[in-house]
Image (tube, rainbow, N blue to C red; front, side, top):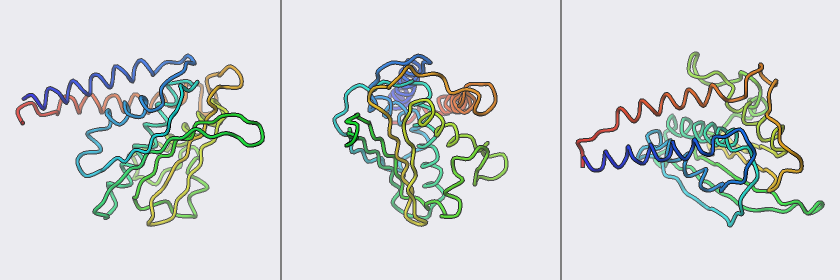
Length: 223
């Protein structure tokens, strides 16, 4: 009973924190706190099989749009979880790495966030397509193919940063996010890239509905 109640409390607290970060206005946030909140929300998907390894650097607060950035973390982590879940390896690992880097030419400081998995990796012939709208390797009805497109627009267009993927078949995949520590100019919502709605809203709503179902399924009678 106590374990189940604590798990529900943890999920609710994470959702509340995620909601505070999930704002349209620009603000400075703790990147590690945002990552941990996302991981906590995804706890039921991680289960006991997937190990999360953290290599966090010493980061100052980062100027960003918390809502879209959290959606990027959610999308990339969910892709990693799904890739590992269908992989035959006994060890299932997601690695998170953060560091503060400086551009040697401009002296501008960037925050680098790497999310890696040891899943099946991404075939070389489809890697150039993964950020294309509606591209997906999932079965029909299992995804809209917008998650990585939204993530790319959020990082590159909205935050003036970079999003890269490094992968070898059978050796997992790593997504590297780089955004300026301080935005060079006022941020503007990245709209109009796919329709007129704010990018990623539907993906976030889908995830929220799934989380509500997970809370309902959380067992209360086990120690």
